[in-house]
Image (tube, rainbow, N blue to C red):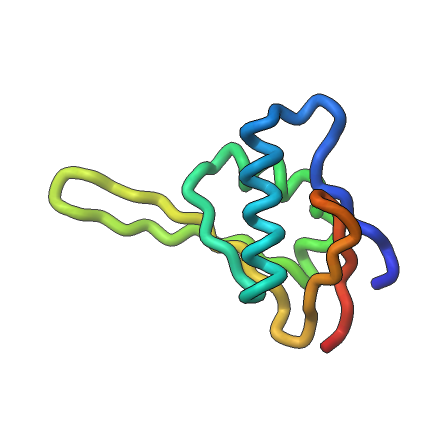
Length: 96
């Protein structure tokens, strides 16, 4: 778990970088994050594909109202882990 996970590339658009930074902020504070943009989740999961099956979980929750459907992705950490941030877009996973 000493591996640094960097979740943006050089060609990542600025808007997506802001959303990914927001995800990392939420994970650092709460161990879970709510995301409303599927593109951001897809990019985030691409960079954490080696870690996802063991420690980081991504699930989709669908909430429907009368005429609209809102899809929310929830990204959560394993309960015994916490994020230690290295910079704005990279972090390590540490055991609590």
